[in-house]
Figure 1: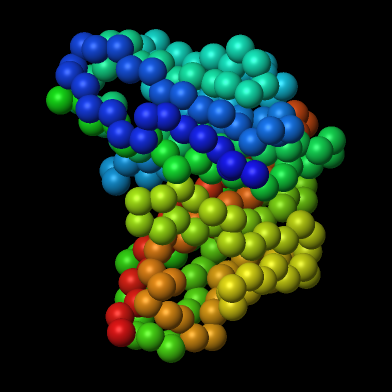
Figure 2: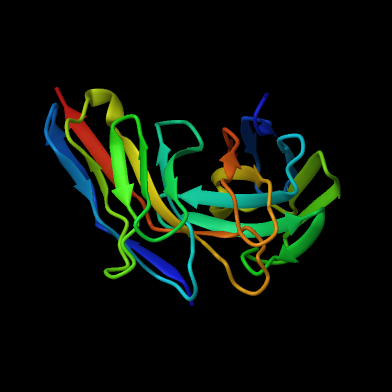
Length: 116
Length: 115
């Protein structure tokens, strides 16, 4: 099993540019989560999907952030326009939600984003 | 709402010392409890989990017991190694009415083990 795949692993961009982060969950998983990690704020849940449907995006910081999951094997997190305060490590995680409870989340290696 | 509180770090120990990282939680219902570990430059990995009261999760010499009476899930290891240096996260499943698979994480505790 390849695990959760994220791309790119590192992204350096200038303020105002559009950034797109990509995630491929583990095959067969039906839940997908996007997190952001910084020294100041720790690990934050941004948005999550069940069966490709966004369930809760209350963690998305503002309208500059958007996420999509067009099919079960692909998701994107887009920032437009990007700002220096968006610099962080962004993680994608997936799990197989069995009816009646949660299951282990498997994390990708993360994308380290630097906005200059 | 549900929450997880971990002891503040960093925790610095010498090799072969005993480790305890405290974790307490507040939850409605009966959540599953998890410990995740994050090594430098990597994503979070599941270390162990427990799904009901009195269950003990264990892996790689680490243990944690689900204590409903004290709402705790403390992580323990009898003899730490330098390779255990990492950030440890306690988490609980959000078993609200939606059952969406969401996990609620503590703030993380950094462990540094010196030779």
